[in-house]
Length: 231
Image (cartoon, rainbow, N blue to C red; front, side, top):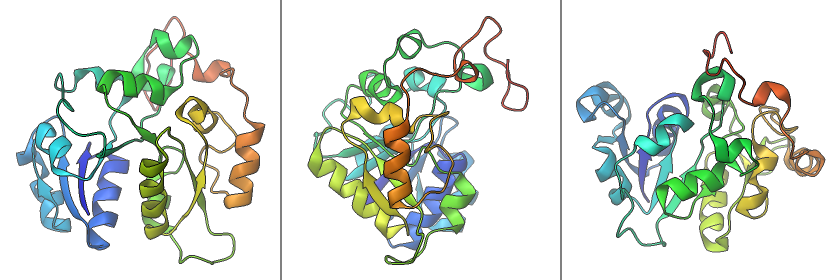
């Protein structure tokens, strides 16, 4: 499968390594231009491209950048891109640590609904609740006891099925986490976030999630601070 990846940070870089190793053709981009991705391309066999090329080169496109930078993507990035192209959103909202205040999310909109609105293209929420190093190292064959599971939320069942299959290829059990308006159940601060649960544990954690954000995951008067020193 041809896969575009927009963002070459921890999750984007990890997916570039993992997906090329699985035989997928990966087109990777970042905000600084393809010339800054020469080493990653050489290490993985991925093709370094512009953000616009990444959005238009894949049957599946992963957007994995800081939430605050989503509105800075090229305008009409996905204009003319068919809805058959699956767009995966891995973004998390860290208001005190990095992103500052995003009013719509503070008022209750699910993170991925906001991303979908900014991109003007349907998205599937996945790969946001696992540490990048665990995504790199902890995949296991199907049927392995206690295999880590990852929640996948979205409104398009066919697109969600594509992502669930990709999750399995990467060595994790995929759990259908419902529609996109339920994707708040896998946001930072929820029981499933960074917990490396198996499929049963993921389903239980999703059911136990509470919509109201805890204070440490909401913006405050000093937001944003830094990941090492939150506001």
